[in-house]
Image (cartoon, rainbow, N blue to C red; front, side, top):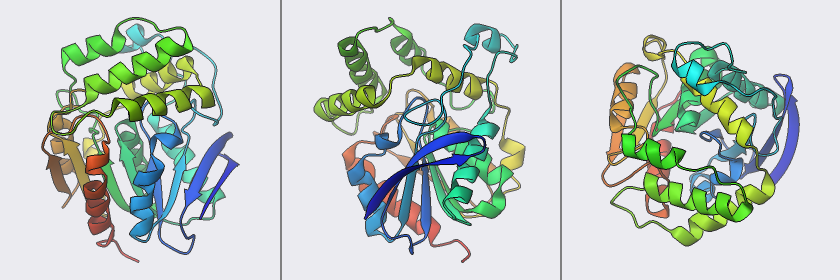
Length: 292
């Protein structure tokens, strides 16, 4: 059973989709930088539904069908220490997620976030601890300097060229996916191409990606705040992650009391089908540790 809709929350319109039985415990999925809700592939979501969870996936602000903002941040100035051009913060995005739960009548949810979504999920747990039953942070980091750093060649590949036509944009996304893949799982180019084509048809907002990037860059170190969390947490990271180095996951698990660290050999900054079952199982095992 699934449904789609749009709600007003935290001053914006948020597009969402639910899957499963609303009577089951809620699971909020928070996607990463520039990615739309359907980047959580339906078959992956089905893994969680089969384990007895009511899945909520949504478009973060500035992507998909959720509200778009104005203003172009000066990324180089932000990297140089001037955050003034950032349009919003990860705290704002975490408040969006809390507002979505409010609008859907969900008092508490298990929260799983990937990459930037992991940063948002961590921030949600810090700012709204009463709303988070358990936390699963994947391929993410704490915001501390010196951990979770990208390989220079990966950053160079991501920043190479400015695709303009739909075909160029799709091809760029496919090659980016290849650059982020690890050694342990075959890269499914056909699946990646189909995902990129669907995303481009649904919504294309490169300025929104810049605003989200600025929110990541101006974020402060969450380590001290994470040490105050009192909830079950599992941190999953790919050993081959070239964008957010595995040290980011190690630091996250070290910061959260009693968090479990799962490092997956051969996994990059990706969700290949071969890892779906393990991620769902690790999430569910952690969720079972939560208080009713």
